[in-house]
Every structure is written in C-alpha cells, then in structure tokens.
Amino acid sequence: MRGKVKIIALFAFMAFVSNFIWEPWHASYLYASHAFNLSFWPLMIYAAGVDALLLLVIFFGGALLWKNWRWFLRADVARQNFYVVIAGVVIALIVEVKAVYIFQQWTYSNFMPTVFGIGVSPLAQLALTGLLSLSIARQAIKMDNKIKQNSLI
Image (cartoon, rainbow, N blue to C red; front, top):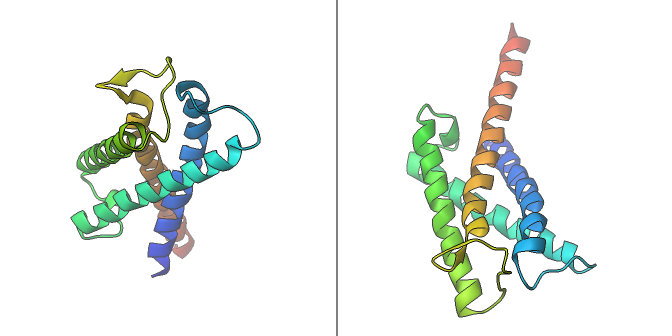
C-alpha cells in the first residue's frame, strides 16, 4: 500500500508543479481575460490543481487499462506515452469547448494559435505535462529502486 501512495503522490506533485509553471505562461499571454494582479495567482493555483486532478484521472485510467499501479514502469513506454497524449488531448478538447464555446468562461487573445477554433497551448498542455510528470516519476521510482537494491548489498 505504501508503494502505491508514494507513486500516486509523486505523480500528483509533478503534475501540479508542471501545470503551475505552464498556467501563468500561457494564461497571461494567450487568454484575453487574464492579467497579472493579486487575483491572478490564486487562479493559477486553482487551475494547476484542476489540471493535476485531470492528470490523476489519466494516471488511474492507465492503472485500470494495464491492471497495474506501476503501469508506467513497464517496457511498452511508447504505448503508455501514446495513451497519455491521446487522453490529455481529448480531455483538453472537452474542457476548452465547454469553457470557451458553451459557458464562455474565458476567451483567447489574438496571440493564441488555434486549430479549428481551439487553442493549441491548452490542447498540448495536459499531454505534455502528463508526459513530463510520468517521465520524472518513472526516473524517480527507478532511482529509488536502485538505492534500495544497493543498500541490500
């Protein structure tokens, strides 16, 4: 059980941090309704938290799909990465269509590149931050395992 919690916590932490870095970068330049002021940072923390939760949904989906909590440590990395990219883009597409076109929660600035009216940056965000989070978690778990093996010798 402890190993599962450690894996999930590490992934969630990396998902939050990577999205907290991404959010201010694209929100301040690529969205018309976002400006740097005191209310900007709580919004960025909230957005990064929501993004981290969405990446956890992808993570748990991978655990169900591969029937293993350590699914991202298996040999078929290309398939796992493909799953994360596709799931990230699909979720981002749903979020953006809902927020931009159905509920008008935000609008894009003139600087936002779009594909069929959907911002490229938000479409890529979950896929790229998901891959980064998985990669860092993968490397950290492998390093931890090597340290444990060396301490047993």
